[in-house]
Image (cartoon, rainbow, N blue to C red; front, top):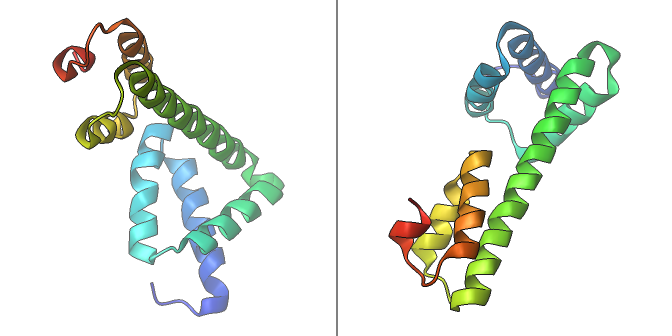
Amino acid sequence: MDYPPEDRIEVIRHAYVGLFRLASALLFDKYVEFIDVYAGVRSAERETIYRQIIEHKETAMLAQYIREKGREEGRQETQRENIVEILQIRFGTIPTDIVDRINSIEIPNALKNLLRMAVQLNKMDPDKLFS
């Protein structure tokens, strides 16, 4: 992305807003990462952009979507942590590959089912846990 540094944030913000206006939420989630990779967006820049989006009235819908997305990601992270903690309390040390598998799950219903299974298991059985 060959824009002067002082214009960079504004150009990326416009790309986010344009994508949000053109695409459904699912496609926005899929392609916003393309913008980040193409533009080489750094986390500090992303925070500045999100702050600007939240502050502008004309981007209120995108700001609301970002807030909701953040809350959902926070809930999922908490669910993952709870599942691991339940398994640790019940069975002791949990193998890293199982923790990694739990942490890779992003579907809310799958996490909910996994939480139930973690509570119901009689022994640490990865096949049954992830069935």
